[in-house]
Image (cartoon, rainbow, N blue to C red):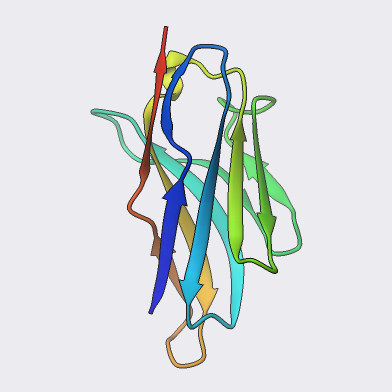
Length: 120
């Protein structure tokens, strides 16, 4: 089994910054793409940014130039640096990873989420 645990959420004023972290643990052979998604109240979950194992990144238009995704393959971690935060960034942020394990078929795992609240 694989677990993803997010941290770093909280309350911040508009224009401020937060850094989210996500740690993957368990029986892991290799982690492929890792990503951050978010779900705002009353809205569907959406992709914020993702990053391949080699470091190629992709991000939503709404966060380009403000959010930066990165990862540390030696520590099985992914990060989301969020700058110039806006009230519309308020959401629960979820970590996602595609994981290869020795005894379990490759599959996607999700964390339980961390709340980010941006006040105006």
